[in-house]
Length: 217
Image 1 (cartoon, rainbow, N blue to C red):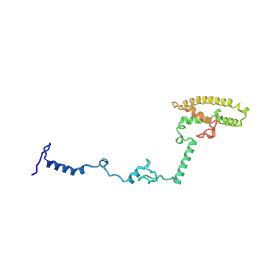
Image 2 (spheres, rainbow, N blue to C red):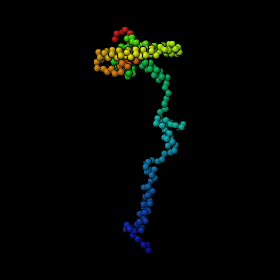
Image 3 (spheres, helix red, strand yellow):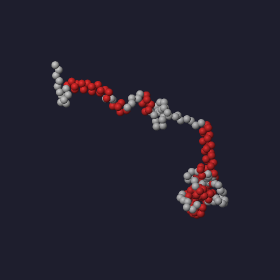
Image 4 (cartoon, rainbow, N blue to C red):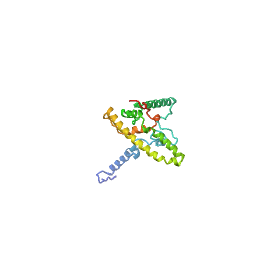
């Protein structure tokens, strides 16, 4: 005769065993591996994982592996592309030499900078011969003649003084000219820009001079 005992919760042994059996049957359906429950997808194959592991930020791969799917290979420039790029560079360089504003850099753009270039090109300045004097002094130093070398230092000091005085006159003339033609425009950095242009040999100035010495503008 079976004897049924009640547990502390009030359920009999048979009922307790039945509930435990039902829970054990439902457990495999409810309890899943932590990895599968967190990802919600099956684990990828090793080949797929390695392919993604060696993919760079640019879409390429390393260690001789195949490129990632969807990464467009970088093609070489065709002769037509090179010809077009060369033509574009030549066109831009020609426009820069003519002083067209669209081809110039930020340092050379603007009506005030164009005015400074024209003023410097239309005048003969002592600073224009600065480079020629430097070449002569360099040749003198290379000769290693003690008698000639004694005059190098005084000539360099005189050359620096001439450039400083000329820069002062350029600054005063440009400020007055800008105030007349472009009132209210900023002249910041204009003196340095004009002095550096005056120190360059006329043939190598960029943009190329539009005016000759003595021309009016």
